[in-house]
Length: 211
Image (cartoon, rainbow, N blue to C red; front, side):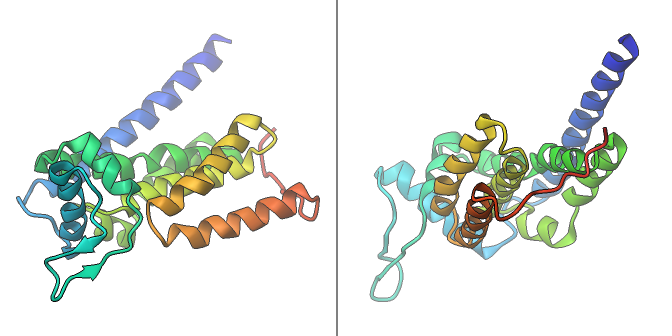
């Protein structure tokens, strides 16, 4: 029993250290320059700045030629405005924390599927440095830094729908994700269709879980 408890504590310790390593690695490069690395980061920054200064959402861009409507889901900007208060250094840190949370969620998904602790930890490490994800989200105020962890959490919840807690997480995220980024709607609809098929008994999920 003591050996089992020690193994669990070691597993969680490694997981936390892995999270801190990924976060520290990303923050190191994020603070190498004062600016953000992508043009889209400044688009997001304008939305956040408007919420803080004008106390309203930016749906009409007066700086564009002739002005134009900007139909964009506002939840990410609201969250960032509340957490950062507009401070640039927080706008750099918070997205890196969001995306680094992938470590925990990918670990849970891999553990649920394989049942192997070491394979799950290795999967979490590899996924954290996936090249496209790393380059597109590093030092950027990107909604994907929040969308991707929540999509993964939704996917994990789908694997554990027999637990009502995860069923509620799945349902809530189905409504929340499209308010963060429009691209999330496609994935959410796909998962909802799969969920409806599951609930109707058309599909039976298989778990490669180690007994």
